[in-house]
Image (cartoon, rainbow, N blue to C red; front, side, top):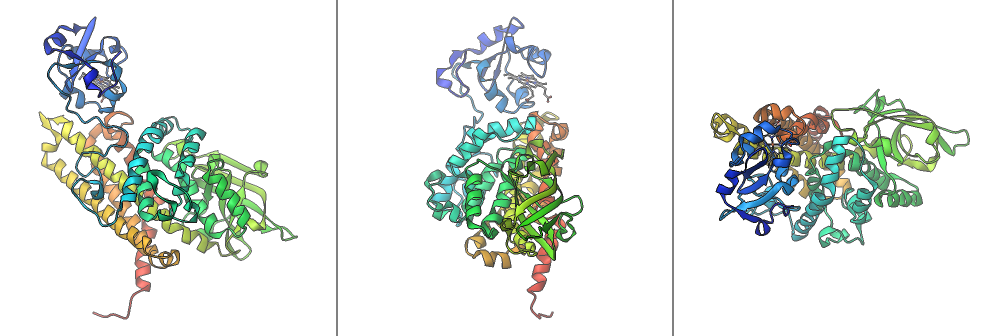
Length: 522
Ligand code: HEM
């Protein structure tokens, strides 16, 4: 059996003449990137069939191979490699866990050699370095498996993330991190919104949209509200500990079949019992991410004079809560759920904030959620741009690489520019977040963050569109060369809808600006 791909020094040296002699189905060798692969026993198993392999028997198939396969195929089938061509060295970049991509624009400017940024300190760089290794080694393999089979994050991975305080870091900066030592040796106290940005963008690199949302998004957008608004301190501590240690899962249950962004139109009711000690909750919720396996539901309800947010534990209410899976455009790994609450009884100290004042609870929570989505979709856009840069470089059309066509270069220029513009705007806003109190952020950043998310998802729309055209049939095929582009094109709309639609957020940005308008005349 051959050594793992990349360990060239231990590979046997083989001449091209020797390879040429192994050109029958009884012994079929081929050369890819100066390495020799024995495909004799792979002929029948090859997904592209045996005929194409026979056409390259004994020959160098490097160009043909990269015209049709991702490099990861060679990493997966490393055992087929039997040697290295004498006097030659492989040239294709063999990425290891944690590596930065050498493709231009595949990394943000602050991670590009020789470029500088005023925003990132050594601790951001250290966190990113260690986190990328963690994500590549532990999260990516499971994410891709679950994305494909539609099942949920494993307890083993959840535990690993909890042990490294990764669940806690998803909530952003705050007291919940104080006293903790984080990846890269970062102290919990120094964790700021740029660390938060690093976390958000590195996780997106698993390229598994459904899994990513199912595993992390629900808790990220609901536990923050518990921290800020739940009045019962011991309950707050208990729930926070359970969720951040990965023992329990939480989701945010606001939207219904009846209303999404229009919170006033919600129909789930919470009525007080005659003794005033409990709420009785009745109603339904729709599109609730990770609701299938949630232990806690942070739920929007109509109360006597308005809208309130209440924490509903599943424990004790098992017979009164039903969950049904909703199939959406993304993988069922997201655990998107239709929920019914039927006479669910919870003590009144499970209320967040004040009764009938739930609007502020939801609104104050939105800034971080929307900013986080802008971090994510911007990073996705970058990954898709990288895919297009690579593909147009290796794909041969009309006898030359695709990127020799000016029309393709125009598309790449647009993709790069849109991605860099979003990242730049994101970093400017992140810097403001770092220098404002929570109250100032609520007052001043709702509009700018709304405009940022709305613009980023519009850019995602354009990038998805161009990327599919660059990839052709592969851009609409799950698996193989176009798999990342296909997934992005299928799922980028989630960012345009979740957490406030593109239109509502654009409008919010302008309305907030209008409120600040002085009596200035032309
Ligand atoms: C080390 C050698 C090779 C391995 C391990 C390999 C493996 C694979 C795998 C896993 C696929 C499934 C699609 C994907 O995941 O990308 C595939 C598809 C395919 N392979 Fe190979 N392959 C090898 C060499 C070749 C060669 C030399 C040719 C000849 C040109 C070839 C032609 C094809 C074709 C035509 C497809 C279908 C691609 C498509 O649907 O777009 N393969 N191969």
